[in-house]
Length: 146
Length: 103
Length: 117
Image 1 (tube, rainbow over the protein chains, first blue to last red):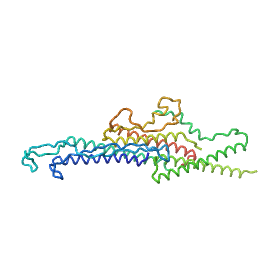
Image 2: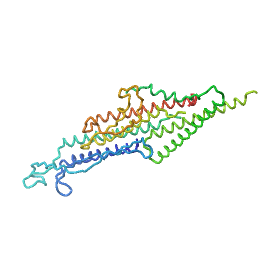
Image 3: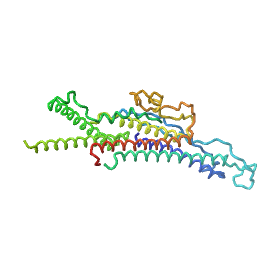
Image 4: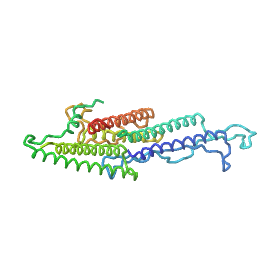
């Protein structure tokens, strides 16, 4: 076990879930945003993640040493492409000609579910990281005090 | 998981010195067997120490793939060396005993 | 001398398998949100003769080596709770192998040093 490689795998998982968490928090924060930086409405985003190609490396020095290079990576952060929610508010400064304000089509329930799932996955990656660390430290104790 | 320990025990038995072919034939034949064993053991201890050194070097360079391999190699080298030291001590003791013998 | 201590080499192989398993589980956990990802597992215990009920065979077949394969059970998604259980199990297994090896080596050490450490 290349203990660095084990950390890298869990670290990549943590990065992906952290980004997913951040993007979901961004969506939730903008649930009532009617104006974006360019003047148009806010487009809800989602994170598409995929697996890095998992490869098994055999050490050049020791034939029996195997190291797995893999983990997860963010493929893209793209707009969800959902239609905006139209709410009738004729007195709102961003209301269109018919008096409707276009709010981002974010479903708060979906976003909360995504948030909780990302948190759980993040914690799971932290647990995997800690397990790898504990195993490596225990291996150093072989031989006792001699 | 059930481990069949009966097949694992021979490893302990293997650490005993195997007697030479004609143990009772006198000091000459016995000494030749022991000398060969000693030579082989010294060579093996040397090999283990070198291997342990290499493992530590790779660890320092960050090229190690298995921490437990490094620790096991170090531990085996240490035990091998300790055994050699003890054999040396016993041989010296035996030699001194012989010197002390009254003719 | 010790020669090739079969206990040490067997336990080392089991340690290798557990270390590889840790990486496979970490990879599964990292990819819990990846679409189309097939979970990985390590094949090792199945290769051992006594696991197949063949008690008369050697403890470790000559070519037994741990290797990574995709989960044959046909799982198409990572089940996080299952992976967490496997993670904990594997970590304890690895540490217990280390402890057993440590004890074995300290018995050898006691034999060599006549009871002194």
